[in-house]
Amino acid sequence: MSATVKEETPKSLDNARRNRAIGAILVDEGLLTDKDVVEIQALADSSGLLFGEAALRLNRITTADLDRALGRQFNYPLLPVGPGGVAPEVLAAYEPHCDSVEDLRTVRSRLVIDWLDRSERSVLAIVGAHRNEGRSWLAANLATVFAQAGERTLLIDGDMRHPQQHRFFNLNNNIGLSSLLSGRAGKEAARRVHPELRLFVLPAGATPPNPQELLTRHIFSVVLDGFANYFDVVLIDTPAARETADAELLAAKAGAALLVARQGKTSELALQSTFKSLTRSNVKVVGSVINLQQK
Image: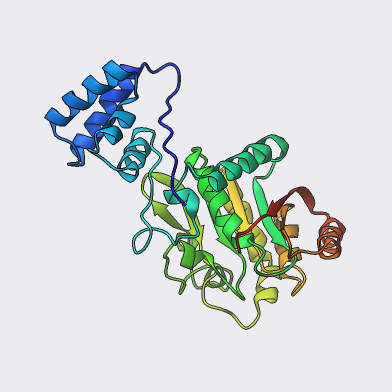
């Protein structure tokens, strides 16, 4: 999937100021020389192009180079794919202008309006009936777009049976939620993904023999309350709701849930059953997302 370059700034910044900033960033990164900047600016002025578009037309940079520069300009870092970065599944971290990520921003906006602005507690469980419906993918990317919007965001991998978030964010899974709940780790188990991105991830940790019992301990409520007071947004990736009671427990502790269904896979009956089990536990279901393709 190729990225579409959208070079946009707040209206209060004039084009010249923006262009100089982009040029300076590209020079700092060794991608352009001062002579390049003069030639690119001349083309931009004569053709009405943005500086980045002019640089692309002259083949002085790639779209990836421009995306990274724009990320730096707006404190919106793009992370590499692979070691030191993220897995290909976390599209929002490295390809923020693709259609799927635009859809995620729409979900984020609706959640801000319908949940975050109206809730006293900013903790949300991401819940799906079955595995392979895109629940973990949604949690990872949604956490990323919240952090990109400047929200101090924590993503908790509550699926201690089939964890994914440590793989998505290339983190060691030896220490995580299971360690914290069993008293073998503290809040430092939550790790920041990038120094310029306010995104923290708490992996699931080593697989315990008793994940459900760990989740019912009072310490989990205490830990979650502490995180809720410290972070602007806390998202919890949960196990498949129709396989164990873990998801219902996690959602009940969170107090709110977002339902995920996958087109062509999730049955209406399974979705209704999951919804009923959540409301039975006094969980506020703030909305649902239909996943068209991602696992």
